[in-house]
Length: 203
Image: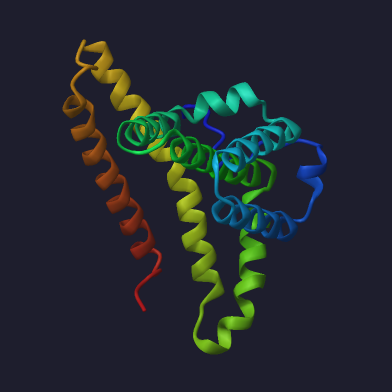
């Protein structure tokens, strides 16, 4: 593992760790809605500073969190360059700030909440929809697979990039993107086979 904080729980004793999972999920939904709806470069910077503050409050460490989200910073850099070249700096700051803030807020939720608590909360939240055909356990299973896949994919990306760098081929994206895609598809097939072997997803 590459020690990523995204999608994994980091034990702690902060107030964020002690808060109920449902309250944190509602707070995340509310903050995310505000971040998306409020426009302008100032709102993007404020959202990013707020998210960094919550990361620091969570006790996971701003530096460690930023280090494990390097892939997202690369995407943010491309987005920033695109808007600076073809748009305005105001839109560039707003969209990059919003993107990084949303990623950091989601990281705070998963880093301060055990996976079991998140899954129990999802089952309870989806439970009333059972009468309409919803299956809360399957929804929770899908959620857990997403959480599990995030650190796995980041690990695969880091390993393939390091392998390309060891061969002096880091300047050619094809040398590490191709094995990354192959290993990602293989991981997805293995996960599907494991679920099928347990009788999940057959109905």
